[in-house]
Length: 129
Image (cartoon, rainbow, N blue to C red; front, side):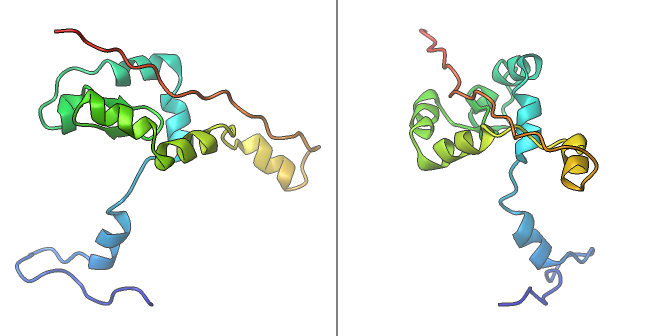
């Protein structure tokens, strides 16, 4: 299978490759971006967002590790049990690569073993109305 040769759609004035649309359809945040979001100051902002009706679940139910919004608390709790979430947690346990580590890999320094980071599933507050 090769890449799509089709360009654009019929009514578009600006031609856009359909192949590029397909590639970016399921885009998720990279692990290093999620590590930056997991810092306490950024995590507090993401978990306590204001109500935004344009986002799924009014931006009230957010999985910090997968960078996904959920419709309600039940869906978020079910997500925590899925294979996708557990695999993401496992991948986040590795510390993100740095420029210093890249230099050492290129032979410009001595080897230092890769560190692991403690990552646990976030706590969920149950709101009583």
